[in-house]
Image: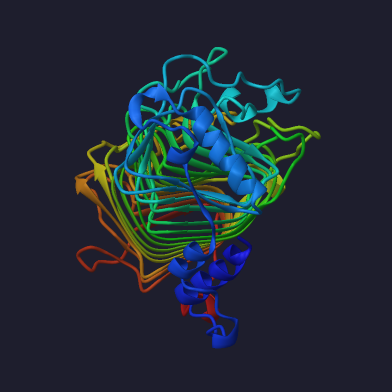
Length: 510
């Protein structure tokens, strides 16, 4: 089962153009690896697959047999497997769901009860407890869910805080090393279809999650070395969220993550999200080839609420439609994390070839930093073209209200710009980018308040008929607009107060 590491290396090489692995060290083909591993059919251990009998004990027996044999595949032939108890996973075991195989959740209230956690106060209840799930494991190595079948909570998993015996997750894993989620479908997961915390070496290909009638899709928490390809996640709450909390009693790092060629949607909330739980630091993320088709909070959301430093994050080739706030970054001061956290940072973030369409005029794309040394810093936009609804009249250009304990786009009042609103943000660069509205708007296209080194190179902004200016700069040290225009080709109208201009040659040609 250790073949997973070699397979992950090959996947990364293919996706990111790394040097080809020599033939002599190449991993075996998936079908060869699968054939080499012994298989244990749950039917041989007493499963009925009739959709009503409780097959949990048979599943556990097959898992134990595979583990005792040094590792193997637990196979689910086509059929309906009712699982009324929490299934306890074991190392070196992959569950393979054949086509037509479905594992169903139960309303019998006989799942494991949530364990006690002395760190309950630092994150929501669902993040603090792991035992109350359909499938649970801790400190396991080389485990997986593969095939083309389905695990379906069947409407029996809880979206709120469950009572004893109720489950609120399909898959719940802590401190795992080597996890594969390939090909399967997770449906109606309750609070989470999948929640992993403190894991490493995670790979997923062609995973489908449908929690559009429940809550979250996949929460990847305090986890490193993750590769996700060809995911299709439709959630009601957050679709794909990267978080770091204090549920395991420590601030743990997150990073070295690649997500490519995937489709995400979120009815009420965020499609691709950092946070809100953000204790430990995040670094080295690449999101590429993503399509987002709905998010009633952020399409691409990033918040540091609990002291985390978020850096080296790169978005490429992403299309968004029907999102409330296409892009939002915020630093907050909730500090819901053990160890007396300070205020976090967001830095070294790039967006390349992004197209987005918003669906509410209130939540303009926003960068919101904190004061002092906690500004957002080092964000670059290349070929980022956003269309927002527009339709507002003129309004005060003063700083809107803000709830620093709340991460949602609505925590900041209606932005005084229809397009970009930048507050406490330094070293921000727009290259070959644009912002437009669907309906005439009386607000400026851009307002920047309190920052340094803001550059707009070949930037295009649509002009509202009653807007006082196209770009308003308030207390910005060192701004530059070069080769920029409105959508008719006219020069952008700039209003600068308490600000200074600095257009060095290097900044003008970047």
